[in-house]
Image (cartoon, rainbow, N blue to C red; front, top):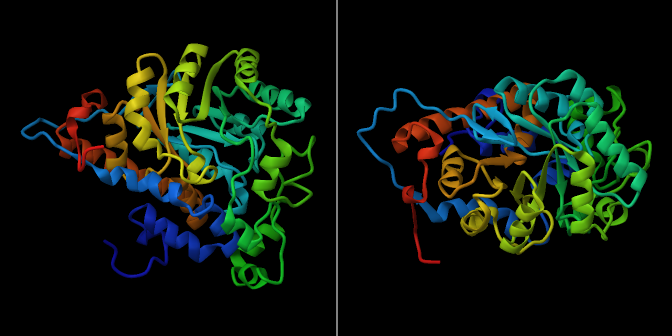
Length: 391
């Protein structure tokens, strides 16, 4: 429970607080791009609400003076079972953008993902930051761009490539339609006051480095020099013919750690495991694509039962608390990943905001492990959970 308004970084004690501060800092089209989902946003809301249907059952009288929360995922050992999901356009949320998130991830030793639609180049991220890094790969109609993205990741010595498989067409993002949000932003009569009323954001956007999508702009103008909504970008630029054969070829062309992001069904999880991917992200794109689709946490148990001994299963979406992390790991997730959990903090305060959000989540995970009577993550099992109603 929060008492009083959130006006500065020090007031933020959880992800919901960062969301409120971000809303104060951002023009409304930009905030609602982060905050919104597809259609009625039923799936976006369910992603977090799903965790509430399961209760934790702790053990007591356990020596928890030392707790180990480290995990090895995609070949890298990190201090927390937490990954920062790749998200697009980050310099629209704060002028530091992906640089701030990469620096915070490096400080905490966590996996950091950079989107193909990032506003900082793969080359710069690879050159400046030493933590584990992955490229979120969008499969474009432009085959030259597809090859170039893979070569960028290879030259920058990225540790993994993750192919997004749930974006063969843009989801119906009605909030973005209502606000007129595009990349780069178009100032319209309806939104002009919102941008003008956030002078700090406006000064950063107009007087710092020009906004662009550097990993794409040599091949496509949309998003950098020609304004486009993300919905239209996905529909116009991404290849709807991408299939399992294309995914296998991409895996072979890359030759390193490889994951699929957006797998939800048991059948697809089995096919991915048989294909030999290193990990699957159980994800519905943050509820931005198919509204009415299942929440990752609701689907986690049956996917882990089917393929958990063959491939690493990463739960992506809806995580806001340390207890959410422990519930996911209790059902067999190797790690959890999220975007909004750090995007609100980035928008609120740049790198210090991201670091504070990660520090709060780290403290929650450590404290909750002790309260559960667990000293290592492998002690978390389904026996620690009870569903509130039969499913």
